[in-house]
Amino acid sequence: MRIVLLGLPGAGKGTQAARLAEVLGVPHVATGDMFREAMAAGTPVGLQVKAVVEAGAYVPDGLTIALVEERLRQPDCAPGFVLDGFPRTVGQAEALDRLLGRAAARLDRVLLLDVPEAVVLARLTGRRTCPACGATYHMASAPPGPGGACLRCGATVVQRADDREDVQRRRLETYRTLTEPLVPFYAAAGRLVRVSGEGAVDEVAARLRAAAVGA
Ligand code: AP5
Image (cartoon, rainbow, N blue to C red; front, side, top):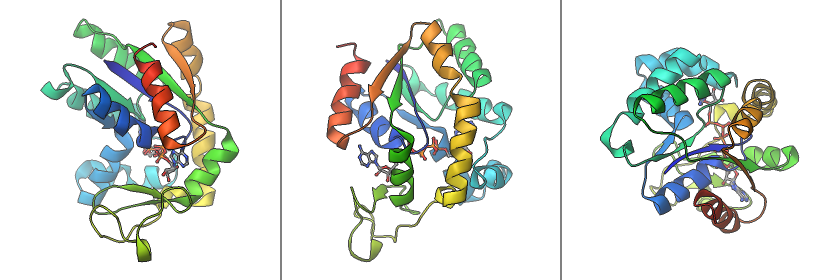
């Protein structure tokens, strides 16, 4: 299955996309993770995007589309994928349609994770991530171990640079301006399904699973 997960910053896309991909047996492709890995490794792409990402703006479409095209051409994506954080602009959505069209494929569903802004702000403020293995925590709902130790690898968790309060606001504005137009874009194509992202992680996961397979 080829699925896109849409939603505000902090809506829970990363948390849910990883689970959904596992259930469907397809890769979880997250552009935010790809950029953070490139930044941590100091690659040319990482150096190019660091300032943009940390300011809460979007990486230019050309660079982002090229990165995703390369990833989706890998053999493990042939049976499908769960895209998290891409597309994020109408230009990216059109590029994805062209790419899939060349392979005589199409998106099965675009799942919009619906979460009120007040809830996402609380989620972003409490989020901590592991700089070593990428695991995500929340200080209230999914805390790390004593002293902020990652439960998976033991490294000390940190706050993402773009989770600072001033940057959170900028990210929400960027989403409203550049990503929200994807809602009517995919609704017009008959591919959009709204799913409530409120409630416990397991409850949201069950709703998304049902929506993905059309139950
Ligand atoms: P990206 O990493 O994609 O950021 P985002 O879309 O802002 O999404 P987040 O990772 O902030 O949140 P999420 O929805 O994944 O929530 P999570 O599951 O972590 O992108 C980062 C940056 O990279 C962008 O700003 C941009 O600069 C650049 N970029 C990336 N893709 C790009 C593109 N296509 N084009 C251009 N630029 C691009 O959950 C959040 C918190 O809530 C966690 O602490 C979690 O534990 C908690 N939580 C989750 N679910 C629940 C629940 N049900 N109940 C309670 N807590 C929960």
